Length: 617
Image 1 (tube, one colour):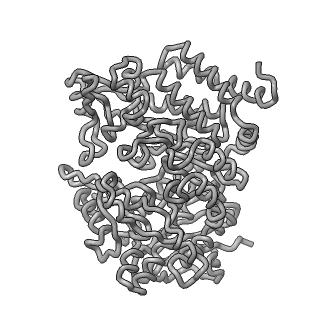
Image 2 (tube, rainbow, N blue to C red; image 1 turned 180 degrees about the vertical axis):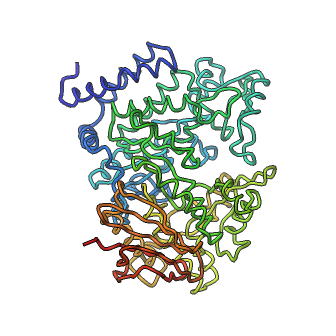
Image 3 (cartoon, rainbow, N blue to C red; image 1 turned 60 degrees about the vertical axis):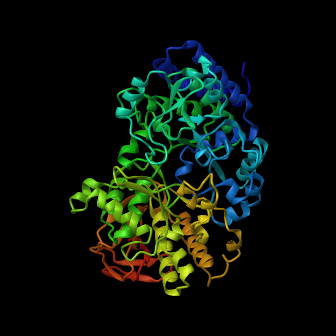
């Protein structure tokens, strides 16, 4: 029997969720023995949590909205690029703190086959770290060091598939039925054909089709993404249970946030798109309850890279929540669309929609990350302006490669779909802003303009409701890394242009105001501290867009406790005027400290303003 106070708390959590947990599990699997095993194993993982993690659970449980606080600022990083290994990241925590970051998201670091891993997203062992990065003890030492500094640690947990080198896959390839049942195996090509009729292709250029033939066992296996990533069969309760155990094992190593990779795809049914089916939400709800029972300090994040209105169901409901946080890839795409068009119309429309959502919904916002940009914009809205999808996507990809539109951007395309005339774009923030080209050409004027754009975009990032996340190196203006072309294992995947090693030499300039690194780092430091200090940046703030009467200038307001901050962002390389009508015209610029009168506000090229309205008397 469990007798300690902590164990009694566990039992209360378990009892609170038991009926729904059992109902949903039996609805999916109708297997009482597997459910009993799950419950017993959850208890064992709870017992195994360290005293410090149990205390952390109690503290976070008492403040369940802690991750919504405006003082939360994230940074995503690759372990090998940032510190060489896990111990190296631990040695760089002083720098992370200097960046005002208190949430770090570690990109894939679990064991995966060399060369066939999709950047680490083909996991061969969920309980081993890549040998070159360290081991599980190193991971736990890192999370413990982070927790002592008030830094939370997140990771990517690949829920949809394993590597074809995973033990289950190796045994399935050898024809063992128990392990074949953990994947989607079919020996009938007609079944495969029927799936292909309704399931879209994720990567039609680099990995066409959704199945891979396995000659060793004479079957086709479902591979939604790449041939070496075998989709797990969540119709099998053994798969669900074992993946939960892997999840809890990593949570007990100190993980605070788990991003559920490709989780909209985890349930497959013939005749459907095999995406966002109702059972996906059942499984996500089950996982949320298991977290709240065993490790309530852990957050679930979905990587559902859909338009915000389509991603909302992954939050669940107030009574039956699912994920705590969702990726916001759509706003990232809309921001860069505004850069290329010098028009904030589409972005304003999207922010209007985001502002209409409940403040309980938290999105992770970013300018750029390790991945590509998919131009999933609101083309129904754009068509009303005479803008057609195919031609507009071509313009955006040409613009950001520096081919059109008076662009200084640099980058490359990936996953080109010649049939549908579509492609995705890869490039780092600084390169897309023009810092790479300006440095190469030695143009001081271009560099000044590029830095101003970069800072303006980060000012917008910090203004948005949700969790802002930097991509490591952006704070110093690190540009595209083209060395991936020299590596045969990476050369076909342009996403590696964003995945180069951190240039620590550049960080030596962050205190020098006349350098690119000094200007960017100092500006971000000011913005981050404003975000943490001002009440209007709190998660409960009311948000709305503001009509500036200039298509190039986005206006965005935040209001909380009689304090309002108006953000103005000029997406043009030319000076523009924002026309602001306010009942209380007295404002102060939070960056410069100077008073500003509303009415007509002249905005320099790529300028931004944080205007705080004085309190009413």
